[in-house]
Length: 464
Image (cartoon, rainbow, N blue to C red; front, side, top):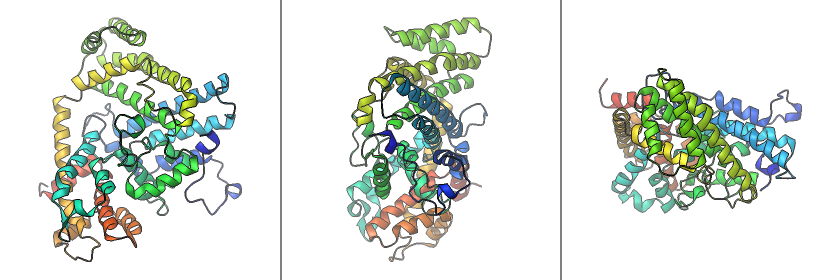
């Protein structure tokens, strides 16, 4: 792989007005950034859960604020990487103009990376997966079980449903800006947000690049087009490693900070959590000692302030710098597509990551309010699937078995999603149409905010 093709700024549909004749002086990636920020899909993230579902506190993160933080960290890391490559001569082919493109692409992918997530956080994804595993086999179409009609890959797409794969659908098809190309972003931006360049048939949880689904069968042609244009093909785009780190750093810091703010974890509990891990390496020791100093220095201050100070001035920097060291040390392997590890997991900050994850699992993710909200969210998503999957089976079908209720349920689905279905189902066989109708429901649900999903659930149940 080389940067000239990896940073491909062409779009799947090029404008009829050539850039040389246009008065638009923005770069292609600055244009991407503006399209994303001004999109309805991005705005909806303000009412999607990060950790604390249906949270009313303005302090606690939503998917929107999380995505902005990821974009900021990713862009900063991109600038650091570009500077290092030039200063140390890591790559003679790296040009000054590549540096600005890298930073802009990473800012875009940071904003995009959660745009495909359903309501109620990652538990929403799990709820969709579990529903299909429990219910797909009992559903029938034309007297046959769906599991006997759909291909293996089609079924695996739902059994391993993944919000990251949904991002590609949202920005390339579902978000109708001008036409069926969605936001029509550049190839480099689209490729950079694909964390796992594998289909549902290639999932291998032992490997970083393939531990999750990267694209749905319905979007395989787009995946191949985009990755061929960048020259990445079935390898991870180098910038995806940096996006992954930025995402991990943002949630590791934010979850703990939000937990302290809400009172689900205290500074003393964080210190004890560190002490439960034996033989600290120098990174862990440095962060532990700094927290103790700050706890003493700011004694009497609000604990959220102490946590903010510590995370911003110590933890975040360690995670960024240690992961970038791994990127530099393995630069050639990354550019060849042969490095298959998380930068953080392979770094000297890996023990620090384990401790932060342990603290979140122990005090935040198991908090009664979080668990209760997750269960409520799961009930809502399951109920919506219970209603909509049967309703969609005979939609656009010659069987004509839709009930009056089914037709009314379908009328509540956005015209954008219905139009996307019709566009992609045209002239396809019945198996593909059936698969696309199931995706139509997951598209509809993933496009909902937490409150919209809750309100629709209550209305369908006659609760308001």
